[in-house]
Image (tube, rainbow, N blue to C red; front, side, top):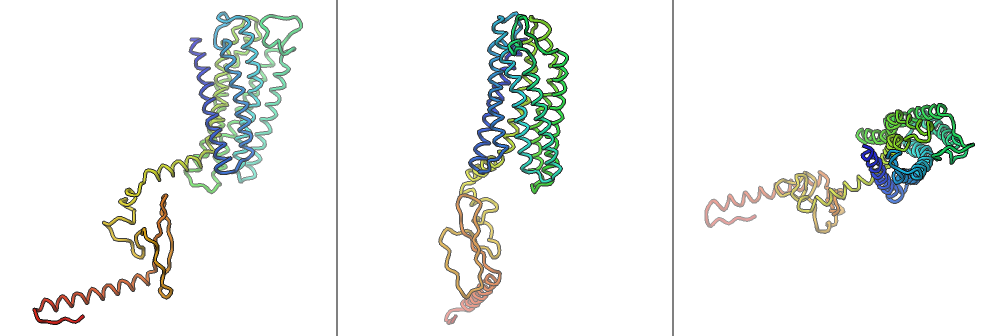
Amino acid sequence: MHLKKRHEFLATSIVFFISSWLTICLRIYVRGYMLRSWGRDDWTMVATQILFTAYLVGQIGIYVHGGGLHMWDISATRRSKAIQYLYAVELLYQPTNLALKFAIGFFILRVAQSKGHRIIIYIVLTVSCLHGLAFVIVLLQQCHPISAYWETKHVEGHYCTSLNVLLALNYALSAINVVTDWTIAILPIFVVRKTQMPPFQKRLVAIILALGAMGSAATIVRLPFLGGLKSQYESAEADYIYNVIDALIWTIVEVGVGATAGNIATLRPLLRGFRKVWSRKSSDPERRRFSPESPLRHDKPPRIGILPSIEKPMPALLPDSRQSAEIRWEDGWERRPRIQKSFASTQERSTMTANSNESDRRAIGELEKGPGCVVTV
């Protein structure tokens, strides 16, 4: 059972390491190269990715030194080293989570038009910043000296903060974290409702942004596992490295889902470009020629007033004719001109053609009367 927990811990770290780096690289390409609209939300997301990478390195350090194993399966030295990495991970958790909130908040501010929505975002970011700062300060003051946190044997003069105070602070900060995350998750629904977007795009953007903040669901799931922290302070022989793994897995999910979804929300121009390239490659000239909407089809007459697409150069327009030329580009790689004539010019041509056909019918009728008849046209 403990080996399964270790494997889940390692797999979660690897999956979100790959997904977060893949999506942040695509985000940099889209915002920095395609759109050239690099903003503060992009800078904060890059900072989030750097902090999250350091956070995952600390998690891997816990795994290497026996994370997920029982205390009797690892030596005291490895157990002390694993708790050292755990302390570093706890220090990195709040800055990483805070940077993620700022990245998503700045992204929403790009499209937020209502003053009320912007005020709500600034309040959420301010509260998140204050409670994150408080958590880091308390963690730094948790043990005196700091090395008492990972010492496996009691040392005279070394002590840590009362367990009840620490657990109360953890639950309070987790509750604030859930409230701020859900506020950021619900707010995009009201923000995009007033933007000039098609309904489908509005729903898509709202869902992606909400997913970025839905990592708070992992915070809720993680709350029961905070009781595992109690083991660290009960005795030096506590099975802390085994009990804390479940909480660590959900912290990875919390930040990893938010970072990945926050990056995906910016990739719509890239996906739209792939769709255009794919459609152009799949529609070769022969397919366009015989498609139902193609103007080159020979089994149906051209529309009134519009000539089929031509490959030759356009003839010069007569200055005295009542013609209006308009160039229309085909939706594809090849651009072909199409001339649209006025209805007046088209009607004149139709009249001339009808008169010519009437003359031909008369001539044929004279020829059918018999030989020797001279027909003058």
